[in-house]
Amino acid sequence: MSADLEKRDPQSAAAARLYGRRKGKKLRPHQAKLLETLLPRLALDLSRRIDATALFAGQPTAIFLEIGFGGGEHLAAEAEAHPDCGLIGCEYFENGLAKALALLEAKKLDNVRLYCGDAGKVVDAMPAAALARVYLLYPDPWPKRRQRKRRFLSDPMLAALARVMRAGGELRFATDIDDNAGWTLARVLRSPDFIWKAETAADWREPWPGWTATRYEAKARAAGRPPVYLTFVRR
Image 1 (cartoon, rainbow, N blue to C red):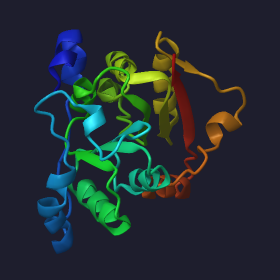
Image 2 (cartoon, rainbow, N blue to C red):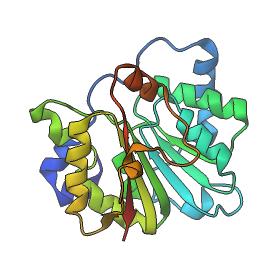
Image 3 (cartoon, helix red, strand yellow):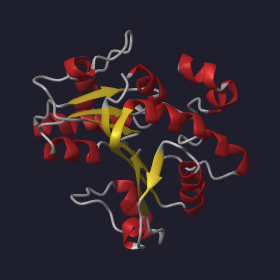
Image 4 (tube, rainbow, N blue to C red):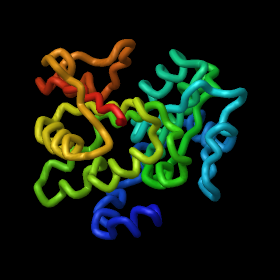
């Protein structure tokens, strides 16, 4: 857990610790090999504050952060669609990391850097106003009342994200759980740092242009849970 968040709000920091297993099914041989060969080249070093301008070859026009990228489908698609941008992906589960590495290798993408662990540490290591876009897509909703304090977009985390996002930057949030959508929206609406510009239902019912659906989204729709797509803009 990041030291800055511990200082800002010890209770929220304790609640934001990661829960559950880090590994699932046994990795395929090639996936395991990628963790040894490709990951060291793409891994984000948090031993010192991140130099956003030195992370990628050349000078990226913008840097995006995806928090909890799952199997990496959306992360790889965005990297491919925005070759002039640099993308940072955070994922706690090793299996998701391995799947993302396989996609990046297959597509020959070099504008992505990865971190396997707590995304809050990446946020705290970023320089101010470094990010043009942040994605939080289908995070664990922690549905039980006593678990809600574990949800990622808490008041302290919104303040932390505001520090590292440039004015006009977008925080994109998707979920198929109504309670999680309402809970998150309530916190963003009371934040002094973000605004929600939606005017019609289409603004949250329709995905973003060029959207790449994830496997989780397909399962949600098959189960009859339509997603919502919320875009919050940094003031």
